[in-house]
Length: 626
Image (cartoon, rainbow, N blue to C red; front, side, top):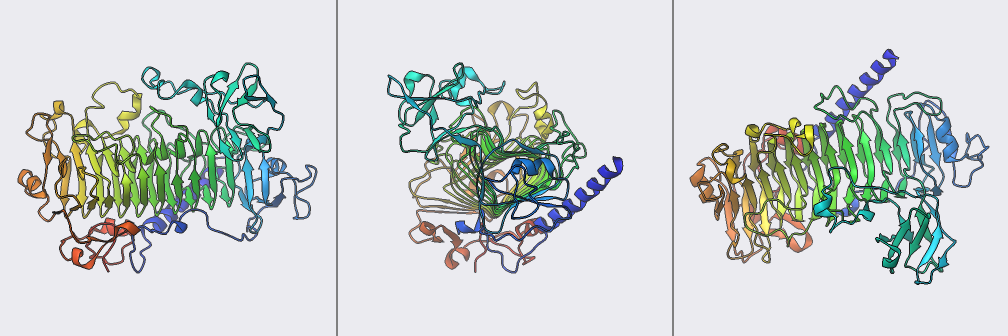
């Protein structure tokens, strides 16, 4: 057993080296910045060849014979039978069609993919066809597959229940012609577009006439469970699955679950992430889920060209894992039930991860959710060349002296050492937010109608609401050493927000009397408006009543810290285009504008993660001028 574990550990180390090399050491001839073309991201059309695996290939189809052996394309078996048979090194090839199934549990390193260009769909619902009309004008059916739920113990019911009623925490999903209905508190509240579940009588009431429509109701909790427990007479082999080309949709709980040790204490990276190594997701779509799209624990995971959309608490929830690569994915529309007080994020990287690289992703349309959030004890995160758009509500977050936005595009909290570089943040309530962390670098980002913020407070001095979590963070007196350089901030005329903030509470002004940033320069600010109603920079610590001052020009920051903003510039009330074409989302500097700016030369580590070929490159924003 120990030899087998050593083998897989060595395999994991090799996979880790490959991922880091691929993620950080692949310079391209011409750096281009985040890709505007949305078709670059997400699933790409494929014609799959049969997988080259050392084991058997099992063929499955939605209408297969359960007694078939599945060993040829002519004799497919069911997906359930194949899952029970596969061992490490085997593959399952899925014919196209809808598989209404779930709880597919295995513990082996297998491959699952489509046959040729066919499209298999794992669907967590069954069709509900037997409806009766009630005296109140609703429709009712009996249903045996119910998924009652409740909020987590830390949820503040007293404050939040008026915004998020308890019935929202149940996980049942009812879909009419593919559109999910919203839950209500009682039968009398049921109207068009809503439903109520009576868990005592096992009845479901809907307000939409089902006549002539397809009504689907959730019946399987999960789609896929890669467990570390014994199952089907086999022990876990420590290898993650390779899953390609699937659509997984309409499940009440976590759709795909890659299991592993979940630390509940401060933990070394050698202690976690080793149960399942090397999981791969490619060209998959995960949609319409009432909890988590994909939950994964395990080192050396890769998610590439996937799409996660219409999820609730998290789209992707990555926990206690190291050397992970996320690239060319689409993450859209998390928190579909609009839960409050629950800290939703389309991507959550949580609990002492190391070296998670997120590059060339599209994070978009998150009105009720954060975009990507590193939270609790993470280290060496890399967030580069991503396009982040429509996070939260830009108009809502305009107030002076306001840092606690609802939602941020990139959020780095209670963690240390990260690079956020070469990204576009477009129309984000807050573009980048660094909170109670240390050694975070923001280089060459383009913020359009979006802000950046650095915050620190006394959290960690005493007992914390989340117990041990805060102990994974840098200490209260060590939340510093941030860098802000070569960033471009552009505010259109109808917005008047400060471009960035360095914030701490007034009662910490004497204790934390030095800047949280160690370097700030070569940042450029373009405001279409003639005047900045809320100033340019919200700064602390400052000799002001609340330890916070509003600075209106870069020169005012230089007066406080002579090494800061010596090469930064502010342009107000511009009458000629500063960027190439804002209306077409072309945020590259035009030649005239680029000539007005002086950029810092990029350090070697920034050049490496951004894949810039010119070792002496210096430019402002996410795009290198031609």
